[in-house]
Image (cartoon, rainbow over all chains, first blue to last red; front, side, top):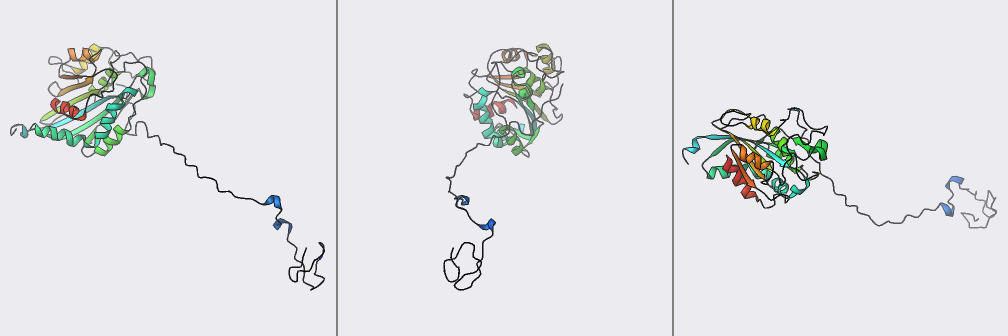
Length: 68
Length: 228
């Protein structure tokens, strides 16, 4: 790894830069991005589904007639 | 014309509509013209010098008790026109031509319900008109009795249904002077039996199975106007 301030090459376990003395800030585990974590969003083609709305059979004005 | 204009006709109509699959053409005609129906009938009457004071319409949609169960017979209350024209339009637009089973349908039961409608009494000239729309012959009364949906209290025979309709000697459920039955139906059993035995019937024979597609809207209005 490299120093974020002067660019000097550092050992992986260094806490300070040996050249300029800048503290090495280590990214917490949970913020590290592994390659396999990369998510690629592809724009999917829009699928339009035409669904004919079935109109009601016998609206609520209709009722089953009573026995006579 | 002047003398007839003194009378205000109070018209109650019951449409018995065969709602089985083959009836799509005429059901679409009724749907497309439902909103204008009141205007068109009153205009036809005005041309004859008759004025409609009040008009109400009730709809009975019928199919076949054995084939269609719960949806074999559906009815509405009376709609007052023109105030409830939009409700009437919504009502007829919700009738879908489907079902039916065998060729004959249960039209006589629909006629029974129509005869027993809650007709409004009174008025100078009252007209109680039943209009049947079907392209099929009808089963005999009681054919669908095995269906759990078949109503109790329905006329047990054609003779009993005839007594409900009545005649000059034996009044039925509707006043003889005000009742009219307009049949847009094939001249086949049992419709032909109705025409040959009942009074105040106007029969416009249709071709069986073709959904009354030969009937155009103007003919329908003229036929209804002639019955008033």
